[in-house]
Image (cartoon, rainbow, N blue to C red):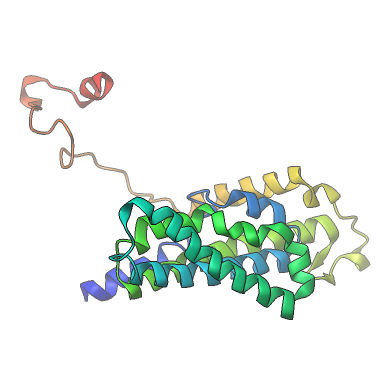
Length: 232
């Protein structure tokens, strides 16, 4: 039961609790740059998802073989190989999307989400757990970009997935949402919304467990954590 719970947690943490875009604030550059439409956002998200899952699996398989001193260059080589495959696939089957995403597809190689998961998770865990981690983080990244792109497209051009929604209502779209200021505004609203709805409403309780000063602290003698933290 514990193993199932742990594996479920590995998968679900990237969806909301540790969403790479809206909670960890990673990959902000492609998030703001490509989310002028829902299709672009989802396209970027799925591309990153594919690279993240494949890279996590391979790095986990090679984690005991890759020398520690050259692990980052090795990770980049692995990631770059999958990015190249994804880019060729887009050029062959979705040329319009490839043109719209432009330079941001090859820049997946240095995306901090992928490098971060390779270093922090895939290099320290088994293949299946790394697969689940890649899926969870990738899906979290995808839905965040897709939602942000949909909102910006709807408010900025009155369309959703290219379908004109508000033309017959006489509403003039606000073009600023298709520009950088509008992107930052929507990004901030989504971050605030996720933090508000996912926060733990229970009051936090402080204890001495894990405290650096637990061995030397004596509350009965009037020792205060605030004083010790201030000195630290």
